[in-house]
Length: 117
Image (cartoon, rainbow, N blue to C red; front, side, top):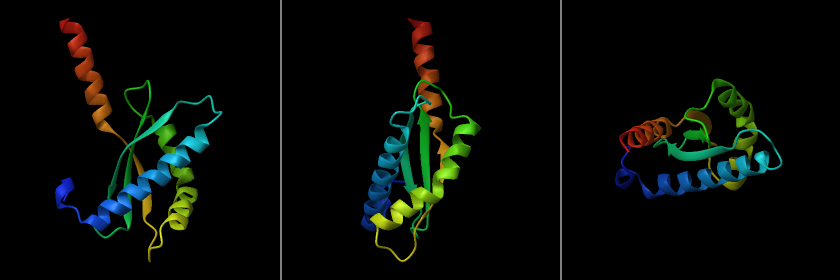
């Protein structure tokens, strides 16, 4: 079910809306902050629409540290309230943040390319 074409249109629409809500929340929370800039790279919605995996990266770093993930975890209730206000669904999806492993892989590939040059 991870393939985009296999997901139902409803799951895709909800995923898109959740991505927009989380992105706007992260932008609002980070404005004026001197902390690392957190980017939302991917949102994966479960088929039953009850759980969301939000993959994040910290710009300028290869990996998100545990402290950043813990800070995001403390913001989950507020993010879920915003999702609930934006979506009119029976259940509000639970949000969990994860480090995006693709960013680290891209950094490794980039370093290998620089070494070869």
